[in-house]
Amino acid sequence: MNKHLSTLVLINSLVAAPAAFAGERTVTFAVDNMTCSSCPYIVKNSMAAVPGVAKVDVSFKAKSATVTFDDAKTNPDAIAAASMNAGYPAHGARQGS
Ligand SMILES: [Cu+2]
Picture (cartoon, rainbow, N blue to C red):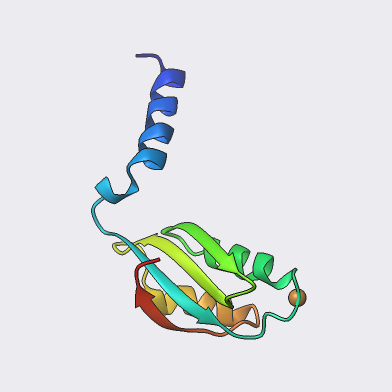
């Protein structure tokens, strides 16, 4: 298998079977201070910058952020702190999406 092909296989397996990775967790936070449609991008970028975070979906309408992360590398407190440092306190992390 050449290098290019193996990269494609890796990407496919990440997309197709995220639950197969040990230690992966998804939590949903309530996020304060999102007042316009640009805010979710800032929240998303600040949470995504935390090492170990794999995926962030922010809902402006629901004022929430659903984050998938590797719990060997980070935790909900660190993710919430990153958002808070950007001006958007995140709290009430609950399991699942
Ligand atoms: Cu805004």
